[in-house]
Amino acid sequence: MAPLNDDQLENIRNQRKIQIMRAAIKVFATNGFKLTKISLIAKEAGISHGLVYHYFKSKEEVLYESLEWAIELNETRKFLNELSEMALSPLEKIRKFTKFALSSSKSESSDIFRIIQHLERTEGVPSHILEFTKNVGMMYVEFFIPIFIEGQEAGEIIQEDPEELVGLFLTIISGVIADDPDYWHENMDRKIAIFLRMITKR
Image (cartoon, rainbow, N blue to C red; front, side, top):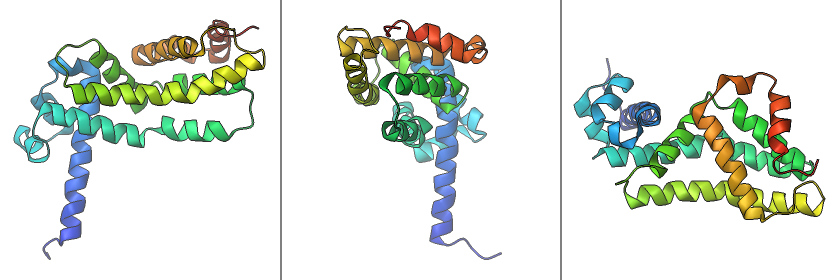
């Protein structure tokens, strides 16, 4: 058998690192920052404890790089880009996002939300990780504020501070996704309509 060339070795290293990061997202989402140990991540990834340290120096580095990787690949960002180009009313864009978010709540997206919520309630998290998660949240806020303002101007959204409305809307959405209650997946359109009455004039 011929020895592997540099490109093949690099590909193996990248795949192994992704394997660790995918496992880390799941473990951090389940256990939170404080209770997650490298040994748990290694077990989830199906590799040895020591091999994790071949790719990451610490638990903090695993968390930061795993979040960075997962958010970059996250389908939500792609969906927001597509949504911004859709010829829909502001309320329909909000409704479409809500349905997308709740429909995705069994995917890796929900693990990201769970991790972020864990970090917001945990002391001793490194500042650069908190800053990163804050910037992720701001991505959603900055996307939705213009849509909410447009909805207010069109008479669809109630006349309250747009930033507060967006914050309330996203907090509830992220809480639902993090908890992942199965009942949201039955009669979803009706439940979304009830939920959106909180922000709409209808």
